Length: 307
Length: 139
Ligand SMILES: [Zn+2]
Image 1 (tube, chains in turn yellow, cyan):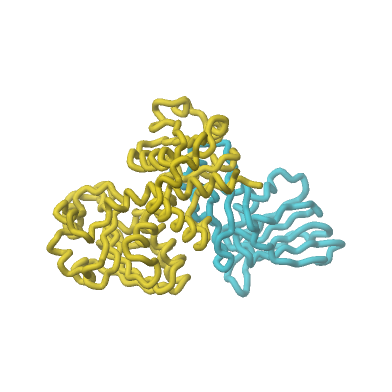
Image 2 (cartoon, rainbow over the protein chains, first blue to last red):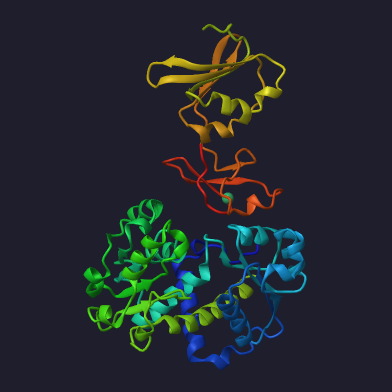
């Protein structure tokens, strides 16, 4: 049997995602039950580029399951800086670890690793391509905060053109019935045509695009904020103008529903004012915590499947 | 322009104008010893202009790439001066080694020995995407 890791969220059926969220919720409710589930197992974290938040989340997940962790956190300090191929590094790690999480600046690197080894590889972000555990984190957070994943109005705000987390979220949420999207972005950073045609239109998912957050705030059940990045702009004036039109403040939040929730993949720069943090609708730090729980559920699932 | 009739061989017809040269290299026709003719910008009633390739020997060719370039291309197998078979190439599920991924952020851009593999992701529109980074293949 071919070893199955998680490279792309599309590899998971809706039933599998739902089952994993059940396990994650059970971990939240009964952590002691899981504290030795991975005793004697090792997770390798292969981080070819720094991403402290994601790496710590994976490591904490494995430690909370009673397992241990090995790996590297930037390619400079390891043999990969001497030009070792991803396949060779993966084959070496396979001798030591039972499962691995890989972060790599090049798109498709975790798939290459999975093709060469018999331990499950989890894609922990490959360039601007996939980051399935971020999407699982987002789904689990929506489920915990709202109670369900269907029949929601989801606002995505900020850089929708380059923001892969938004593309994955849209793709994953389009599996659930009654979901509608509101895309809030500057004209320059609209959601790409291929997401509109291949995901939204192909599945008959209703959506609207707007440049004004204020106009739509009151309709939203979820507001997914992303960063507008300076390097996306040709000139500073455009950047400053656009950046400041998408800062979430307590003033803007006044128009939102009482039970609306604000998510953000983090790190943030200034797109959510810190004054929003104490609002019960701000879910982004709880989202970080949920990331660990869903990664625990994923590690359990993949180790069980490939046992 | 008239090219001598083929007795036993292959005529690849209705190639989109301008793509004949690409197919010539994809199919590695330059390596053949038999007669090969590439006709550019031939008049074609329904499509304006087209390219045609004529191969003067009954050789085995992998037509996989033709379906990727354009499923409207026709392949005619000629036997004893007569057309024995005519077909449109099928859309292959995967294309190996024939085209390269042009995404500079793709893992294939820095690991040269990796095979370039494209998969058919949208049959209706004939869209192929890189197996690693999902970048659309350019035709
Ligand atoms: Zn590629």
